Every structure is written in C-alpha cells, then in structure tokens.
Image 1 (tube, rainbow, N blue to C red):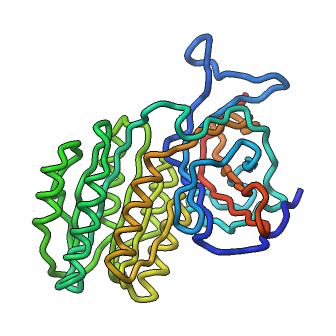
Image 2 (cartoon, rainbow, N blue to C red):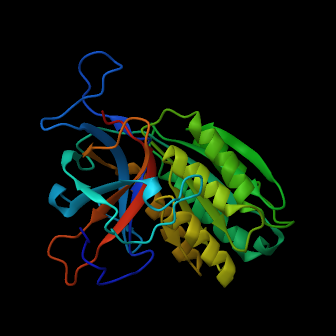
Length: 324
C-alpha cells in the first residue's frame, strides 16, 4: 500500500499538529478495559490543529483525513526521534476513522502555551521591541480559560512568569525582557516542555522564538516532545539559515509549524496564527491494531477538498499501542 506521492512537497505548507496525549475514546465498562469497536481493534483519539501555508484551518471535514500507523520497528527507529518524511510508505497500514469532531463541536476548550523567547545579544535594538509587541498581542488574545507561561533565554534561561491567565502579569514579564548573552533555545524549550506536562488544559503547546542558531541538543528536545505528544511551534525571526533549518526541524517533527518572519507585522502574524491554532482544535479517532504496549507511529494525512492540485502532508507521533 503506497500512498500517492506528493504533488507539492513544501515542508511548512501543511502541518497536522497533535495537541494532546493520545487517549481511549468512549470507554464504558471497567477502567482497565479499552473500548473496542465492531470488527476488532480499539478506538484511540487525539486532538490537533491544522495549518495550511501558515494559516489556521478550521473548516476541514472528516472526508479530508486519512490515518495510517506502523510499529517503530519497521524502520529500526527505537530510541531516536522520528524524522517525518512527508510520505506514507508501504510500512504503514491505513486505519478507519472512528471519531471526528471539528473545532466548535467540543465546547470552549482551554489551552496552555509556554512562550520561550530569545533575549540573546543579537535581539537588541528593534528586534526585541518587535518581539514584545508580538508577544503582548498573543497575550491579549487569550480567553479566560487559557493560561500562558513566559520563559526567556540567552546562554541560560529564566522562568519570567509561570503559567497564569492574568494578562497583566504576562505583559509585565514580556516588557521586562532585555537582550544580552548567547543562544540556547533547546534547554529553555525542555524547561517549557517539563512545565507543560503538569498542565491539565485541553490543548498544550510550546512556542520557541529565536533570531539565531542555538547551541544545545535539538534532537533530544524533539524526542521528548514526541514522547508526550506536545507540538512545538517555532519562529525564526530574521534568523540565519542554520537557525532556520534547526527551528524548522524541531517544528516539523513534533507537529508544530515553522514561521520565518522578517518584519514586525510578519512576526505579529506568526504569533496570531499560533494563538488561533491552539484555540481551534480537531478531535480525530482511529481504530488501532497496535498490540498493547507496542510503540508505534501514527500519520494523519490531510487532503483538502477540491484542491487546485493535490496537496498531501502527514504528521507523525510515537504512541503506545492500546490494541488487544
């Protein structure tokens, strides 16, 4: 079973963003018994945001999606972060969709977002002014049920404001940032990821904004995010090529979206796109055949209805099998 090859292969054209850890759907019976579906298998669900060319999409329908899965052993990638190839090859098997809920059908869902912001020396001058404008507008778009955390980094990181829904506290933390030092985005990102694990909001996401190439271990950050199903959005603001490549790698392989703004208005638009995305999530469920405890990869493929040309892009995330 080989899926159609991509007609358009754009690394940031479409991203399926998995927001929450996979969960069993509609379990009725003892809590230790997974919900089964007719014909065998277990229905598992996850939530995701959908982006096309950097814009949040909220009107996709069930028929626009397909779900595929495979065990990690098929490519021998146990213990390593899975690198998305934007393809569905013969090692994947298609699974039927058992649940689909578009944005708006699941009520006023809450979100928790960790903003990880660059305050290195290269962010001095207009760049940090632009960052403060964009980040403050992100905060202003929060709903009462949303919480945000501010972590800033240079050679080291600080938690400038722990998770809160108080916009005045978040604004004060953002406005207090000053530039100086080196760039270690990945260690700061790991701190934000750790903090998100303690949150119980419906949607959880990490946003890293940087203007440079970072030291540290981006592969470990990706592996950590994949293990818990938390997407990482990344913004390379006037960043060099290496910085853009690294930020793109992190976003594409955790289900996030990469943005490369060069002006204040483009930076504002990137922050606003992330805000809209995490506030408008889809729920999708599929019938898994993975043995319980087996680690696997799921790929959700989105094909727009009546596209001018076929665009297919999947996202992958490790999961622990919940089958029988």
